[in-house]
Amino acid sequence: MTVLMRVIALLIGYCLGMITFGYIFGLINHVDLRKEGSGNIGSTNTLRVLGNGYGFLTLFCDCMKVIVAGIIVFFLFREKTGDHIHLLLLYAGAGAVLGHNYPAIMKFQGGKGIACTVGILLMCFPECFIPAFIVFMGAAFITRYISVASLTGIVSVLVSAIIMGQMGWLHFNPADLPEAYIILAILTVMAYWKHRSNIVRLIHGEENRFSFHHKEKGEE
Image (cartoon, rainbow, N blue to C red; front, side, top):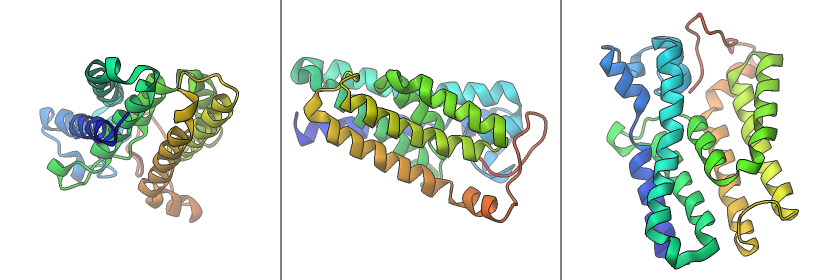
């Protein structure tokens, strides 16, 4: 598998990642999400500003753009890469997160990538979905901070992927696992960087707890 294939997969993911569904749904409702709520165009701020329906629709669409990128990459390179295709799918997913977080068409002001990471989890690491879901829901239920749930959830993806990969439970070619771990680690660091304002508010006790019924500061 060549460097060029990796770059192409990243670019395909990036282009699809730049489709900012939260912003689009906001425009449909004559709302600029960049000027409402937390000012973020991701699924959580969409939910808080536009309601549950649009929030969950944005979450679904942000997951799906990762999977669509993966489907395109799969059909482009499946015959040329064999069982290395799983790593290329991860590159496509990582590109989608980059496009979502830093969309060139939005002056690089995007979301925080958690919904896209769910898409990566479903596409590349389905074995890790249940542990990550349990950690996310547990943190959300205990703290009622979606930022805490998101950050603990993404760490659990990295940890469970490493554990399951070393035990031979993942579909990746074993030779590709170190590279896959590095990509996941980079995505984890990026998530923490994008949530840095949330982390500061948590430290100072100023982060608002999540509610389906009130607009609050903070999330994606």
